[in-house]
Length: 490
Picture 1: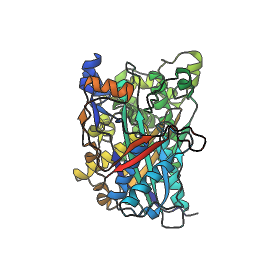
Picture 2: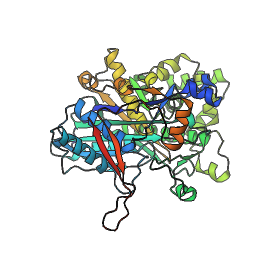
Picture 3: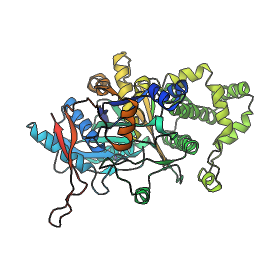
Picture 4: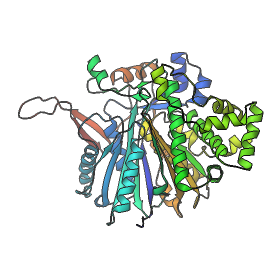
């Protein structure tokens, strides 16, 4: 069976205007600013009192439709990837209803009535899984249809927790088509991996039953997580997904990495994708021969680590869930490899292979914070826009995207930039999505975080969706308790 060319033709983003400056936050919490700046970033966004994941998702999708002049009647697949949904029944159809109403108000046709509307949940990987489903839909769809995949999330952590500085909120919508205008995805070569990790990152609903707390409709969903263990899960599962991708591609991993133009990965905070990609490059060297093995040996000699011991460790398959069962969540997975990584970071190859290839869009992403499922597509949007601004000749070049979802799964997605990509990239407008912006005071941050409301918020909604009301009726003939009603502010 011949599979048509499928991929990404456009991206559009929405960020709420309310920003926490991490330098200010460090002063509020007596946290080290230099470490936070290097490891995490510069700031993060918070949703406003009249915003939810659904309003952000719909606003980004509306922007995508407008910026790329999409005929809504061509949309045959509208998917939502999120872990922030607040309805355990309906999903993407909520966003479809919001878009249909706004489109009709502007004299435009609604989205195709025969459109599929799945919601996909798997922590931060929901958007990637939704994209994969949309690409498969397009590969089998005989008519001239397109797909929109929305990745939208609100990342909130308890104040005082180790994750507090890595909060964020954003939504990114992707236009997927046959004969894509931006990035062609090698659908049959996507690498996959999954394994149950127990306490990696969870949101059991039982927490809310036990606490019986309420935020007047401003639902908070702080995760259960274990920092070092969750980091180990991220690194380990990403390595497995990349290994599966290379198995399908039947290519030398080390050669592929050297040939890459850019790498985009799931980004809970600034440092971890650099660590993950650097580690995967060292693993690639161990699986190659000749010059690659010699390169790995040089790093081992500089670190005073036995080469054979490192290679044996890299060929092993640690059982991370056993750490949970033994109560040893702070154990370092691949300890020799992680020690070797510290030496590799000081090499010229690290700058050339890792820092340079993960550099596109990286500075702008330091202002996004952790956006869960939206983090990867946001980085892709920022990176492609920067490449356009700098006049980089990307056509025909390979790009790697790696998604990860705690819980625990990963996807490694090989892509190629298509000829004429510049026109589609010019419509992304990622930098514009950062405006308007209002830096929050300490009191505003705490009130907005803890209660969903605060005084002095100055942003005025403009061409975006807001929560207009929340239903409260429990009458037998008409019940709408807890259901959000939305309005498009044009």
